[in-house]
Structures are given as C-alpha cells and as structure tokens.
Image 1 (cartoon, rainbow, N blue to C red):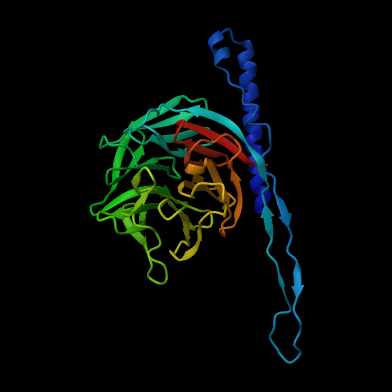
Image 2: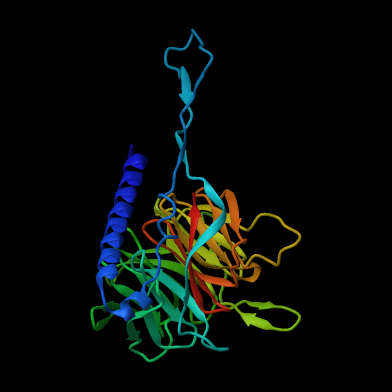
Length: 370
C-alpha cells in the first residue's frame, strides 16, 4: 500500500505539472511577444513516461517439519515481500545543462538537487556556487565566505545550501552565510544532510593518518564512526599515495551519503570501495566492483541513493555509474548514454539522476527507472 500510495502521489504531481504546462501554452498562443515564443522549450520528454512502475513478488510459505515431542516450535516461515522497480536498459537524458565551469583547472565537481527543476553546483577551482534551472539559467550565485573553492555541497530538508570550504562547514540561508562548524586538527572532505536534519561529515586528520565520519546535530558532535568491530579502520588514510606510470596522486577523494534505510555510504577512492555502515556505525558491507577484464580499476567518486534504497556510484575513470541495492548486490551499470567522466551525483524527489561530468562540465538529468 505504501508503494502504491507513493506512486499515486507521483502521478498526481505529474498531472498537475502537465495541466500547468497546458495553461502556459494556451497563454503563449495568445501572446504577441515573439521573445516568449522563441524562449519556449518543450517538456515532452520529461512527461513521456509515468513515474516508475513496480513489480511485486508476494511472500511464500515454507512449512517446517513438525516434531511432536516439542511443545514450542515454528510451523513454517514466510519469505519477504519484494517490490522491484525495473530499470531502463538505456537511460533517457531529460536535460543537458552546460555550466559556467570550464578550463583545465575549473572542473565541475559536485551537484545537489534543490528540486526536480533546480540544482546547486560547485567547481574544482572556483569560489562560486551556482543554482541552475533545467534550461541552464543561473538562478542564484553564492561566493564562499573564505574566498576559497567549495570542497563539497549538500541541500538540507529545508532547502538551505550547506558547503565546505577551508576547514569550515557553512550554511547559506537567503543572502546570509553562517559558519556552523570550524575544525582545527581535521580537514572536512565531504558533507551530506540526513533525513533527520543532522549533517554527516567525512574528514581526515592533519597528519593524513586517520579518516572518520562525524555526525553533527546543529553544531554539536553526536557520533564518530572510524573503526570496525575488530578495531580496524573503516576508511583508507588520505595521506597514502596512488601512483601510475605517469603520475603520483595524494588521494583525498571521499564522498558520503545517507541511504533511505539510514545506512551511511562512503565512496573511498583510494580503497577502490564503497563502505556501508549502519546508523550505529557497524559495518554492513564493502562493495568493490563486479569482476571485469575490460575496465580500468574501480575508483568511486560521487555517491547518492534513491527512494528504493539503491546506491548509485560514479565510476569516473570508466565513464559509468554503478547501481547497487541496499545489501550490496550489483544491479547494473549506466554506461550506454554517452556519459563522460561522471563525478558528482544527486537524485531528485522523483528519482531522476543528476550527473556532474568532470570533463565536459555539464550536468545531465537521467531517467533510469521504467
């Protein structure tokens, strides 16, 4: 019932949007303003398919053998109710937005959805964050308080922008910027806003020998996640180096997100793994990429989740995105719609995927559910 209600709400929202578009088109037919006519952009592709359909596998009962000498015993077991959302064989590109990032140094890095029609971005070497519409228009620009580039961004439940620059986590509300947290012996790498309104921050120590995830409620530190049950670090040290035949990298790439089941998912570039822990910090699994002999090494970048608790992982080197379920089972790749070096990922309320491409500095909006 919950799945059906969710789908019904999504369909109603789509119908309301289509109704509004029809009214706008009728007004456009009556206008004498040629500029308005030329500025019109069709939204047919956006409305071409209904919200994601699902397939239900009902529970089955498996009887157990009865031992007549035992008083208390299970007579059988029910399997799980499974609700599956079929994925498209070839995702549809609903929007292709060229951002103002560009050049060798100013590459696009992060994207975070404000809604299904507006998205925040930040670049690799620019101290400006921009809010774009689907038509590629800049709705708002915010300059970092320090004047240094933003390391990462996220949007809160209230629609406020949170960003990392230097050693600070900052909140943008309206035209004001408020510093929430200032770190001294740790450097923040990535931030995400949770369903409860907390902030999760992954950070590395100044000596580059430790990495941890910290939960903040407002400005108060509520939780530290650093070790597994045997005292082994969950995440790689950012001070380690990765070398190729031509270059040596010091790897600070780590991104995180909260799943719908409240698991915390970290994309650990150096480890070549996605590390998933429960809300209380216990290790659930590590995803290290299905075996393949034709692909470059798996080095995850951006990470996000959808309403079905699937985990989506940007595989920048292989120009693809991995879709994994909440238990770490590989579902499929998105690698057949012309992606080029996907870096940042974000999913909107309708389960459309926004991809920030590092090379082209474009944002692509994809529909990947049927």
